[in-house]
Length: 389
Ligand code: ATP
Image (cartoon, rainbow, N blue to C red):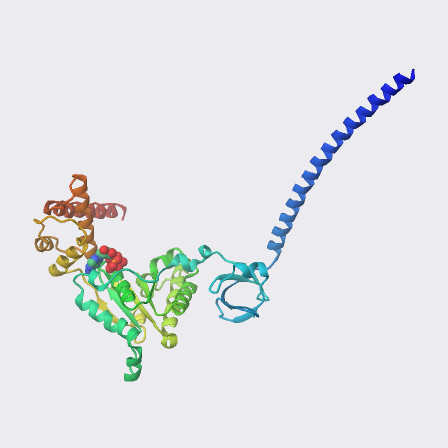
């Protein structure tokens, strides 16, 4: 082999080595990427493992953020402690947040308000937009509610000086759709109180096993937001007469009711909170909830009479373009047995008839058609429920 040939062979060999080197570098890069992926996966699995191994966390509310740490109050036993928080958690923490704490009260996590059953079970309204003038035909009931709920909130001192206890709770009872919820909202509005509503039926249907805790939370929330009106709708769902049966569902309902009674019994020093409950089934109620110091003021909210129906028509047509031929007096006479909610539905439906007809003015005929349609729908509903009964 000549020297030139040897040189060429060496060059060729060198090129091959460079190529192999490139291939190996590529393989190495790919292996490094894979290693990073696997390390991430291992990290994640380790974290999951850690979470699974750690004991459950307790739920608490961060009450106060101070320079020395955070004051948290554990739900359930109401124990208050001053605890340290890691800077990363502290940055996102605000007083009033729900947090998860471990055995040594370290704040591990800020909980999303959406996961809060309280938020789902209760409807909280800082200032409901209903006033007494929006309620038709219930002058006497409004007077009674004002006396039993509004006066003690506004003139608490007067009650103290005279030395009498205002009624603890007010029970509104009467058929559906007669304005019970409106009454409760209107008092909250007139007294600048927070309106907190909880539906008894949802409590036992949706939040099984949590009823008693939610009732406790309800009163706690009201204390945080006072002055407050607690409105418990469909109270018969949690306060029906005791039955002999001992199924677990009944036991759960019993526990929820016992919690409600004990909250009401220990209620005196709770400040500016008033309780209003409503029911369509007064006959079903356990008399224990009607004892003095509990729901000791009963107010019946019946279906409106003719004058009431006329007023409710006027209220719900305030913003409607109603033609001159509409006679609310005559309409009110015609729709015997209608509830306030029915009158509202007639007004909306009459408006729909006008729109379907491409008119901007609502006529007497529209109101008649609306009433017929609503009656028909009610008959259909009754037939359906009879078929499935
Ligand atoms: P339920 O027992 O079914 O919960 P309720 O008695 O609480 O019913 P509301 O929810 O207050 O009834 O009323 C339903 C709707 O009917 C109200 O939003 C309102 O539009 C209308 N309504 C009922 N009663 C009256 C009334 N007296 N005056 C004006 N509107 C009324």
